[in-house]
Image (cartoon, rainbow, N blue to C red; front, side, top):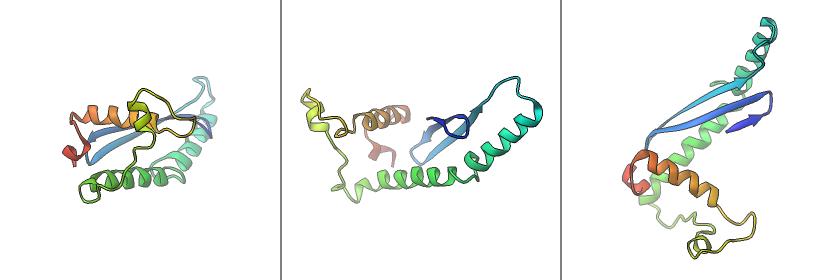
Length: 123
């Protein structure tokens, strides 16, 4: 994820296993920043986007809640997030804003990274 909010930041969520992921973040800044400006920029970055910052705990909670939801599929198979997949599988497209193709592509890559055929195998 590349954010351009309090500066340009890069955040990477890396799945390590089905129940564990690591999130790393970097802030991009000019290499020739004066030390006092670099210190201030770093303080602002950590205050807002750091592990205990104003923004990150909400994001991490969302990721953790999603993981719990994926793990509950065995107990609640009626939960279906297949928005737009029937048209995609048939070779067609849905209107803009009516498909979750990008989300499925992300989670398919995540599943492949975990080395499982179905997320239920990893739960």
